[in-house]
Image 1: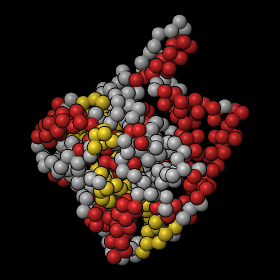
Image 2: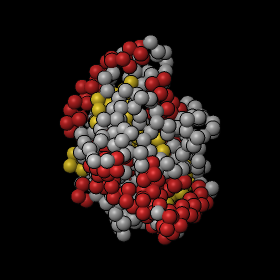
Image 3: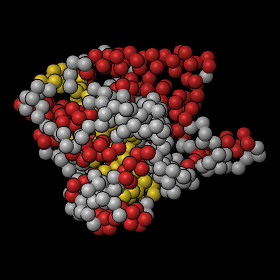
Image 4: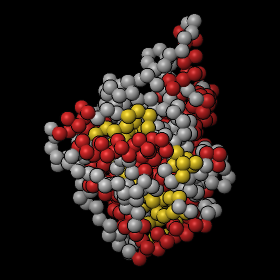
Length: 474
């Protein structure tokens, strides 16, 4: 469903979503906490009906602080954490008239790409419940794809919005680093984390960006860059636009049906007047993306989550002294997958290892970004299939394995996090009734151009507002 389909009857909007969510939760296991909307409804009724999100129910990934509402980041150690303030972006959503509907499941603390390690269990794919939704923002993606809510918030550290969007057949948008404030968002890796969202169409993505974007003095990494009227300025005329196909990705995809779908979309863009050329990056550099990402992300996560000790807040396990309390709390509070990441992060931060691991990874990251920048200096965007396969079964999920087959194709969207460039995934078709997607990346703060190109793609695929659960009218 689209934002524009909602009525001004706030109670009716919420009741409809609530009715849809009952069956959806049984099917998807995507919600951690349902939010009582009563006070919000009364507050919204007093607001201007012309607000961009007036009365629109929105799902929130469970790593956004929500005042008075439990926020767990899908981790046992935060099972009893109730924030005393709203994240900046949550305040912006409320000011725009939105109704917070539910907190959604995620990979624990954002650490994963499958949504299999959440404290509340696996999130199921709306098109086939035996398959994964992708992660770490899988709960948000699943609810939008099922048609329960028109919009859901997510975060993206490696491809945590854009990969689930591909697997679930919806729009997943990660704007430029700094475009949206991260104040009040439980972090994973500070130099890679981005706030973004899921919608069912590009027009809604443009509206959401205008609501969420902006400088925030609480987040010193947020940008002063001008915010455009993204929705009003949407224009799908791509005549003369220069589009670069990232050949490294396309050449490594074995499923010819995905490649054929991609090529069909490209042909249609060329008929619209776009100039499409094929480019390649150094293959060795692209093969370092995942290991460099893991070193940097896990080191930063280790530092960011050192405060989760069971003493200051969060779940506490008893012990004979302070040290034992902290050890017991962190051991039982985190899954084995997260504890493993903390071990890797700590190892790379040891004084004797910093130069040869962490600092070296930072230097390689700079080389990768410089190479990527050279391509985007010559083109309006870089495009490739968002994933080399349809949503896999849990046992077939590659995750973060150093797979020779899909090392580049599975992980290339990390480029958007390392560079901070705006990057969007949108549906492009289906393979055996399962959705597949295309990923498009543009220059820093060039979101308007990116949205315009994606709007042209959406018009050619005809998949605007398509959901697994059907188009529910409100």
